[in-house]
Image (tube, rainbow, N blue to C red; front, side, top):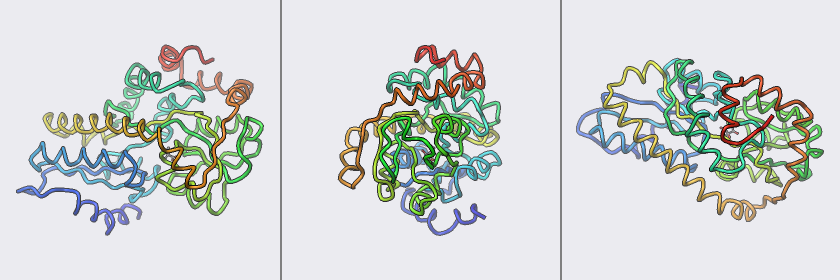
Length: 333
Ligand code: X2X
């Protein structure tokens, strides 16, 4: 059902205007779906990668992009990339963890101090370990993870000041077991919703709060339905660029190389975009009416330790994955 919707008018518009014409029709069509508005750097850089792939293959390969949940929400797209209806999908680490549990390792609360640690881990031993596990699920993960960002908490109710503010808070989290665990540990009442449902859920007060990186709050206009934002940096989140295993393996080696180079290099640029955006996004969101407050994050960590969050997830991820993470960020539990 949702797949048919995606093949309708809106996606066609994207293709018509975005793909230059080549002498021959494409021999290979790659279908890529994601959950973000077109204005997010992920879509801007993915479009550049698509143009580059067409150019470098002389039009033999085309990559069609289905942005903004046109083919359904995250859970739908994850099954589409598994069954081959999609060639590519970019699930957040939080979301692919419903299939590959260890992929949530970067989402251990307050694990990363800064981006140096993030990329040291994800371009290093943690990322390599996760990619291997993704391959075990018969999906191919490209090397370069794309940036979502450090997640912050917003609410339409009283500003979130410290762990005590979380008590009973109805907060939307992605479809992600570690997010439910973390927010339950903090004393909140988390609800898992796909991103496609977030704006409406906030607008209709099905939930009062949500958590996302600032660029997402900006492009998805969540500031229209939220009043304050606490700078918690509680999780770093990124997108894995994954391919259907069979389709990937079936591509000629020279095409694989062109496609992975185009996508990986676009991913590095996308990281830079988010970095630049992070310098101005707060000012922009303030001008749109979202207020900001600092937050006693130490009280969050203490509450999580007390709730046994770190001990539980250390055990769930296992000593090897946990050891890779701690080799970069230091002792967590
Ligand atoms: O669903 C979200 O909150 C988002 C957009 O950050 C993810 O893709 C996990």
